[in-house]
Image (cartoon, rainbow, N blue to C red; front, side):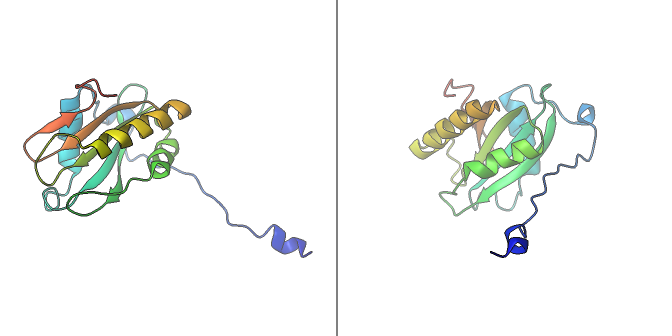
Length: 152
C-alpha cells in the first residue's frame, strides 16, 4: 500500500470574513425589515424574470452577518440544497436564518413546494440549533411572511 497517497487529500478551509463590525450592520426586527433588505440586495433586472433563493444570516442580536444567494433557477422554480443553506450559516457563525425567494409572477402566495421546503429547512435548523426565523416571498410590490402567517 502506498501510504503517501493515503494522506494526499484535499484540505478543507472554513472561513468567514466580515466587512464591518456586527454593531454597524442592520438589525432585522420584523418581516418588513427582512423584505426591505432582500429588495436592496436583489438584482432589480432579474426580480421579475427568474426565481432565486437567498438567505440572510443573523447573529444573536438580530444583526445581519451576511446575505447569500443560494440558488438561481427559471421563471417558475429554483432548486435549493439545504446543505448550502446551512454551510453558509455555519461559516458565518450565524445564530438564526431568514430565508427568501422571489416569485417573478408577482403572486405572493406560497406554493405547496414552498411550504414543504420551508418545513424541511426548519427541521434541519432545529437539529443544528439554527432557527429559521422567517421565509419571505419577495415580489416587486409586496411580500409574504411565513412567520407572520404562523407557518413556521
